[in-house]
Length: 185
Image (cartoon, rainbow, N blue to C red; front, side, top):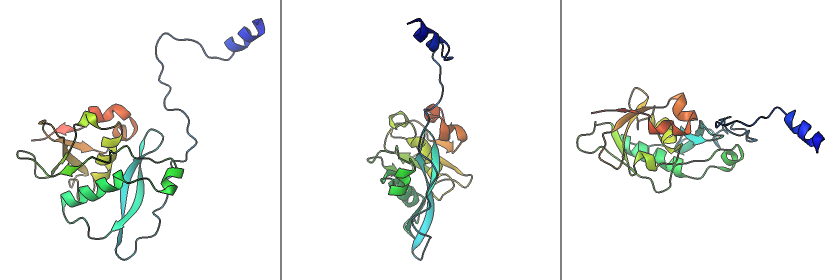
């Protein structure tokens, strides 16, 4: 028994009275984004969507039909549908998933919103931890976002729309979405 006690105290692990955040558990997935299933061909365009892998949001390339998204709202709906679709076999093998709910919808601005605003059908705090990061990072830098690589999003409530950027904190910290964005008028 004494040998067991000596072995356990020699392991370097000590009890502590405060919680210790040691980060995410090690992962055996690569989180290496697979290439889109084919090169862009006539009638297909490569887009970038952001999926979750090992507690962070990373870009994955996918192919979509040309000409589907002719407006900000149509682009947002196309991108949202990609985020809601199941990860492909290669994406799943690399450890990618999506936190974006399948029943989430996006609409155009409400009265009083900026012209470039999009509204999501739920409140921000009702979204899973990385879903907002996936949406912001996927929309920013496309026709769904603004020219400055941001996106203006409102939610189902009466709060003002907010301008979001795809920051490192938003991509890597699950709780960053709760304080992200700046109010716009």
